Image 1 (cartoon, rainbow, N blue to C red):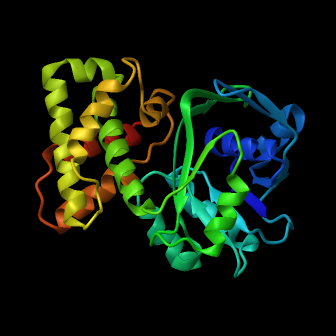
Image 2: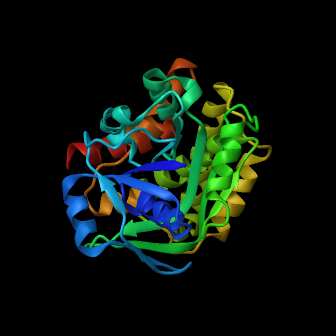
Amino acid sequence: MRILIVGAGAVGGYFGGRLMEKEADVTFLVREGRKKQLEETGLVIESVNGNATFVPKTIRTGEEAGTFDLIILSTKAYHLGSAIDSIRPYVSDETTILPLLNGIRHYEKLAEEFGAEKVIGGLCFIETTLDQAGRVIQTSASHDIVFGERGGERTDRILKIEDAFSRTNVGFRLSNHVEQDIWNKYMFISTMSGITTLFRSPIGPIREESNGRNLMAALLTEIISVMKSEGAPLSAEADTRFMKQIDGLDFSMKTSMQRDMEKLLPVEADHLHGYLLDIARKNGISVPVLEAVYANLKVYEQNL
């Protein structure tokens, strides 16, 4: 199976490297600067789950490389448009696209561009970043990809992907209910990123201050209400499970959106919270905390 990973950053670089450990046929689609860096230093992973260094195959947009069986999108949402343009030459009738972006909005765009039948469901759970030298620094015990057909079928292509991912140093898991998995993560990440960026604080101080905890619970309630109004297949007792997860997190845990703000980088405000706000307004749902979260992110973007 020929696999193309769009980007060799914190997420794509990590999972691509783990596939390379198994000697999978992996190519990274990267920008010129990252290509030169990888040629000079290799793809370096420093991880609590094991260090590794690889000499990766790379291409730039437009380079001749044929088509691929599987394309993994690991970009930020605000790069989705350029990522779609960059992969067009490498998509055939037999290509499967696996997005690992947070949220749900990107599925609509990918279906419009390539057809819904080419896109499977995907999400990942990992804490990782690139350092100044371009090394992938991975710090969480979790380093998982969940994937599956959005309708839950166990198709030939999904079983081939499962076989390609098997026996790697990563938790690659085939899900029969990936749509529910995607929405549950969307609920978690939009609440977590919303509250930590609003307070500019790790999760510990927020959950231990009564008003902070109450505001987080209110945001969660609003988000669940919005998602259910759109028919999202959230798991039962989603709110209770969320608060249990929150209480189990390290006191100093920060979300990736919060870290991006600290680095004065763009954020996925429109893709995550803006999309939920659009649904709330369409369905006439009052969401004052979500509105405050979104306004905070938009003001931040204006000041970049």
